[in-house]
Amino acid sequence: MATAAEKILEQVPPHDEDAEAGVLGSMLAGEAAAGVAVDALVPEDFYTPRYHLLFGLFRELFERQPDLDALYVQSELKRRGLVERVGGEGVVGQLMERTPTPANVERYCRIVRERAVERELLAGAGQILQLVQQPHSGEDVKHLVGQAEEIIYRVADQRSSQEPVGILQILEGVLVEAEAFLQARREGREPKTGAIPTGFHDLDKKLAGGLWPGRS
Image (cartoon, rainbow, N blue to C red):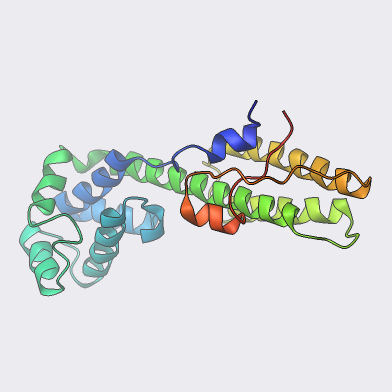
């Protein structure tokens, strides 16, 4: 039976492609909406690669000319050779069609931001699992748990109070798993360390092959 930590790490990283498209479409539809998005988000908040790239471009262009009209954006995409990377010549029109009104831009931004926070917390869980697997030469368990807590709450401290609580609660379970793992080592018992691939290359690499098994 998979632990809570295993279940959450095996899922596709949290993201909402529709909300990401909604932010970009809203930016194209109105200067005020573009300003809201630029203030609320950074490119790294976007999971979809082409939207990550587009938001970075939109933000740069907004600082030069707040009115991000479609022709202006399309011209810049062509000039920079980015048309294919962002999905073709029709991407600007598609974004505008997918966003009927920019009035909901704050909602779209909140969704994109929340999913980004969740991904950061999952990355923190991966760091915790890696930390636990490393040799510690008698290092105190409480010290290691403290390091794990710092990883989690460093993410929380960087974000607003409107963050999802569910993932934080799940990651508290990761700390419990970590302490049990380290306690087994202190008592001379060999903890299980067979790596279980999560399906995400970068995460598996950080975890030396995959997710360490927790208790059943």
